[in-house]
Length: 197
Image (tube, rainbow, N blue to C red; front, side):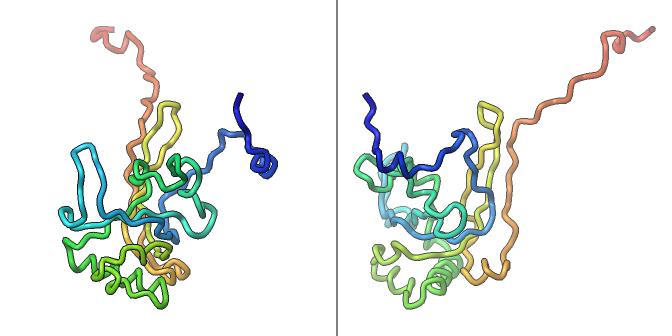
């Protein structure tokens, strides 16, 4: 017999179940949940020294979708953030391009008064990034799922400051539309192909 957490059940808001609101591309305030300096992929084990990046696993910090990536679906059996689902909410802090790294560290510093992202980065103090906020424009790709509904995949396209979000000073998100297009029914008849009618 299924076990129900009665306190959670009583506190839950009734819903229809099928009307899940999707996050769409746009500007969001995010918060670092975890930093991954190594991991496993289908092609093997990786480390940040080899790849020249770390993964900033994030959650939405403010607004309608605050806490989206902290619900049970994104947690493992022990209640920690499930690394197998990081790909849905991760940003790569890379040092292959110093200009881009400089911008990212500046944004992280400006968004968190008293935090020096460059100093934490150079000292390998990745735990200091956890809990820090940053603004981001999330770009998106939309396709059609097997039931005919739009399905969005979001990724960080640009880091921005929290002030830029408040002022609305950021670029429009890039959207790649891969939805299945349904062809309009043909209005021709078999007689249209007869050359001498």
